[in-house]
Amino acid sequence: MTAQGIMSRLADALRAVPRTITLSLALPLALTLTLAPLPGAARAQAPATSKRFDYHLEPHRIAAGVYVLIGRNEDFSVANGGNILNTGFIVGSGGVIVIDTGPSRRYGEQMLAAIRRVTALPVVLTINTHHHPDHFLGNQAFPAATLAALPETRRGIEQDGESFNENLYRMTGDWMDGTERVAPTQPLAPGRRTIGGRDIEFLALDGHTPADLVVIDHASGTVFASDMLFHNRAATTPHAKLAPWLAALTRLEALPARQWVPGHGAVASDTAPIRQTRAYLEWLAATIREGAEAGLDMTEMLARPIPAQFKELAEVEREYRRSVVHLFPAAEQAVLEKGHAR
Image (tube, rainbow, N blue to C red; front, side, top):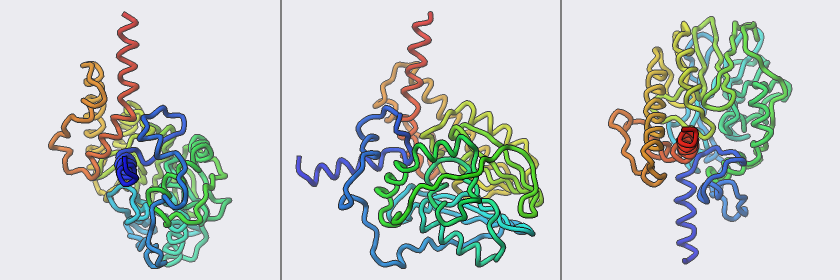
């Protein structure tokens, strides 16, 4: 095969794999390729002009003292620099609470500059809601003493942060220059407390990852649900367990919220992101279970059609393929174990 053909195969494999994966997963060769370090010459190349590294972050005020920076409903690319998520901040009388720091040092620095356009108050808490790289690789820009996360999230960042950083460099190029993994120093626990003059509550959930933090600002009724919710975008599942995720959605739906900030997609004033995420995950769980019980192989699973109701979700074809790779082997194993137990 020619060098051009090899690179074409590699590019196809990279586009088909999850954007966050653990080193312990036994995945096919295409997934292994995303974790193997590449020489600098093979990394995705971003434009050299510094102006091209501007994320154009604009804080959107969604309530008094509550701001969201909205990312694109896309996958990681050199074109978007990894700006595919929603981050946010809450301004209280005594300081600023930051909710996720983005995919790179550049993003974190530009986020802090955006906060400074709104307020000169100090950052008193910087939260990483979970350990996926687009939510913590901007940590360098914020005071180290303010970085906080659930203990399991901190462990995930310490364990997988460097490989995530390498993976994003391959996918987004020189946007990642100077980015290093910085783990949070403060352990967060669920509960309600006053922080920076705001009435804040933390919910410790799981399902999307082993530890998913939800942040509630009671004064405004705003719920920062992070990647527990996707709005008009297919959910990502590299570390997902669908049953607890669905149970967590039921818990979220019972909250007396006035607006919802999903991890990806538009802010909503109703529970549409919950209903949409639940419907997609229920279909995904049923599809994978039924395929395993029917004895389908992974190739047959990958070829299954997406229902019309989900066709309009951003990245649905790509995310479905990734989810089959993530979730189908365990479903097959469960069927085998059930058969042996009879």
